Amino acid sequence: MDEYILANIDEEGAQLARLYRDAHVCLVRPRMLSGHLQGRLLKMLVRLIQPKRILEIGTYTAYATLCLAEALPADGEIHTIEKDDEMEDFIRKQIELSGFKDKIRLYIGDALDVIPALDETFDLVFIDADKRLYCEYYDLIFEKVRPGGLILADNTLWSGKVVKTVVPSDKQTQGILRFNEKIKQDMRIEKVIIPLRDGLTMIYKRILT
Ligand SMILES: C[S@@+](CC[C@H](N)C(=O)[O-])C[C@H]1O[C@@H](n2cnc3c(N)ncnc32)[C@H](O)[C@@H]1O
Image 1: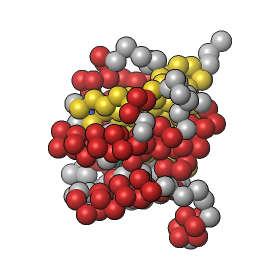
Image 2: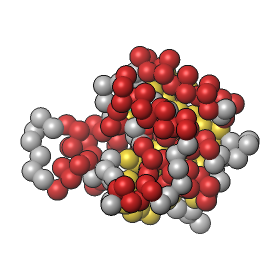
Image 3: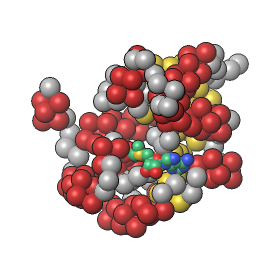
C-alpha cells in the first residue's frame, strides 16, 4: 500500500530524494526524517492555509523544512530549531541547494531556550523534536500562535506504543501520552489525530470572540 500511495502522489523531487539517500548513508537515525508522503502532506497544508510565518521544532536534515518552504508564499518565512550542532553542516548544505535560503532561518540550540527569545507570531507550528518535551514545547509556543493558526505534532501514536503497557523507563512514550492527554483536555483548540505514518496530530487554535 505504501508503494502504491507513493507511486500515485506527487514526486518528492530530485533534491529531497538525494537528501533521503544521503541521510541513509551518512546519518545514524534516518528514520526520523518526514519522508515522501508526510513531506507532500506538509507542502499541501502550506498550500491550503498560506501561512506567512512557520516554526519547526526539530530540523534534523531539513527534509520537512524544505517541503514546507516549497509552498510558502514569497514573503513567507520558516524558523527552524535544531539542538544537535553536528547536523548544522548537513542542514546548511541542503538549504543552500534548495533555492529557499531567503525563506529559512535556522537556529542551532535548544528549542526550550530559543522559543522564548523569538519575537514572532506564527501561523503554523510543526512540533517534531524530543518526545519527552512535547508538553513543554506546546506551552511555550501556544501564545505565539495566532488565533486561527495550526499546530502540527508528529509521532503522536509513537509506533503504537500509546496503546500498549508503558514501562517506567520509557520516558518518550510517557511524554507522548502526557501530550495527547493535554491536547484532549484543552478547550482552546480543535484537534484530530491522523493515523499517517507514526501519527500526526492537527491542532486548530480557536478564535475566541
Ligand atoms: C524527528 S527529528 C526531526 C525531523 C524533521 N522535522 C523532519 O520532519 O524531517 C527530531 C530532531 O529534533 C532535535 N531535537 C531534539 N530535542 C530538541 C530540542 N529541545 N530543541 C531543538 N531540537 C531538538 C533532534 O536533534 C532531531 O534532529
